[in-house]
Length: 224
Image (cartoon, rainbow, N blue to C red; front, side, top):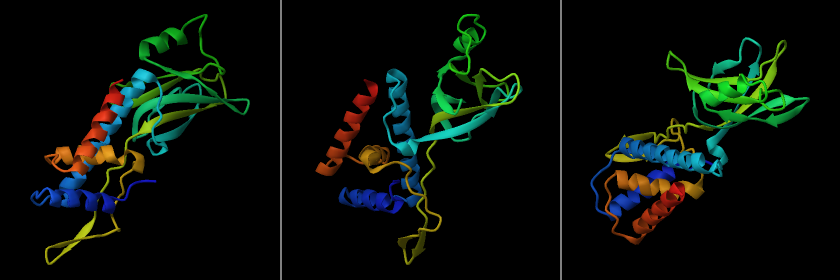
């Protein structure tokens, strides 16, 4: 499940208070929380590119379906697309996994008389077209009818938002309009550590030191 934005703000404000930091607006906390999540996902993707294994939370992955005809082998990627993981094509009622290649490799295989893709060996490539739009191209495409392709990808996280009201200088959380952090509890320690560092917090107490150690350990793992 996603992490409550209210709990996140309470935790961060508690540490800010312990460190005798000045007032930080809810908007600034949101800004750095969102930056921390995006930076963490960038590290996770960097690790995936090295290992080809994406063992992170299901909240970060998503499926998109494409109905491909002879004229629609190239289509738009989802608006929240960040990184492709794999593709599947449905063949005789079974999803057959394919491979995603860079543009040069895709063209070489697509035009090969020996390695040409077929319904049991589908391929795809992802690129940016001349208009600056993200595209995905599949092969093979049917001579007639259609194929059903599925793309499994890392999605862009929804920006979290702490909605609130102010009365007599007191900030009160408002669930209406609030958006929780789209990441699970098992990764939130790293997110908090990054957020606090972005807020310029000196790591002086054991809680923050532990959070920083978690961040460093995760970062080392990401780089391996």
